[in-house]
Amino acid sequence: MKRFPLFLAVAAATLMPAAAMAALAVGAKAPDFTTRGAQAGKTFTLTLSHQLKRGPVVLYFFPKAFTPGCSAEAREFAENIDKFKAAGATVIGMSADPVDDLVAFSTKECAGKFAVASAGPGIVSGYDVALKMRPGMTDRTSYVIAPSGRIAFVHSEMSYAGHVKSTLAAVEAMKGK
Image 1 (cartoon, rainbow, N blue to C red):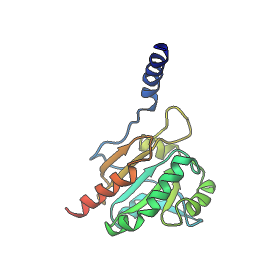
Image 2 (tube, rainbow, N blue to C red):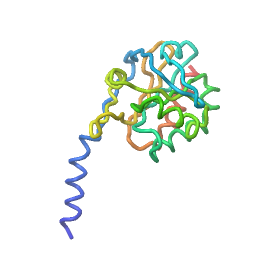
Image 3 (cartoon, helix red, strand yellow):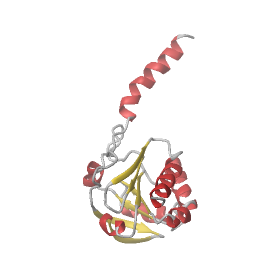
């Protein structure tokens, strides 16, 4: 019996470095990018610097469309989108999925309320969100980017729980300044 808990401890310790996520630091310049996105099933070209002209941007990276955690996170962002808008923020979901997969995701899971966009290798590298244990996917990292283009807040954790709440609090705190 004592071997089982030891095995779990060893397994957890082995997996932790692979699951640990790097992220851009608060204060770092957010890399600008242009990519294809979708909202409410319609595709368009998305440029971060254009979005920042309207106010802060919540740029949240998620591993894969239509997986349980990613769908739940998208629905939670959709349910809270009016609060983000009231705080002056734009929410953009980012995944390494092709935009064709994100078209359906933008309608079904995002309820057409915010954009999701395809993060190619340059974006994934620039934001340091490559999922080490699953090449070709991103980890789950949420950035709040100030209109200045600087990272104002980072939440990086594979569980989707807390990403919406923490990014909303960060955006609301920015509005109060």
